[in-house]
Image 1 (tube, rainbow, N blue to C red):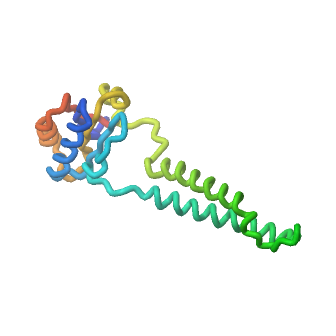
Image 2: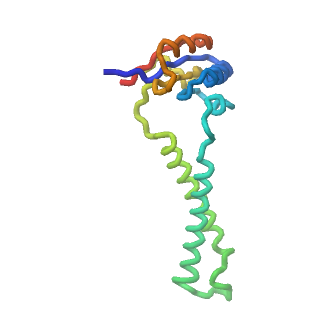
Image 3: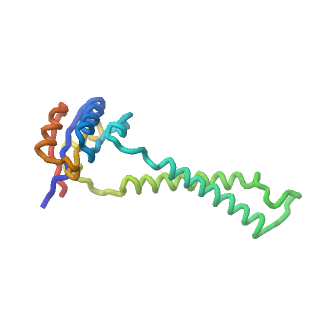
Length: 177
């Protein structure tokens, strides 16, 4: 048994896609998405999506790395092995900079990678859009706008008719198998 996942409209230009996204959102559709072969400036705003939380997550990971790096150096140099070398103070923070910097970068990078996986819902070995034969060109030169079936206003015939008014190359139903 297969269910309808979405109705997809295919475009050959990013400007047409942006215009279609704006009109679709203005028509009251909420669960819409776009697939593009490259980053399209303004697509997030056109889809009505909120700003990502990734910068804050990476910043928090960097602060954690900074704290862990400095804490490790402090623990080793002051608490665990307090050797006075060359008359310097035990808590010589200047000598802690390389380790602190590297831990900050390391935890920021790990937060960025694993946060990206988590927020994007990866790994996703199969997506219903892969059932659409023309979707192979989404990584080359085609742009897709979809209205998902869980949208409150979703009625297949009305959505198809609306998407046809946006002058796409093609409008197709996508099944979720």
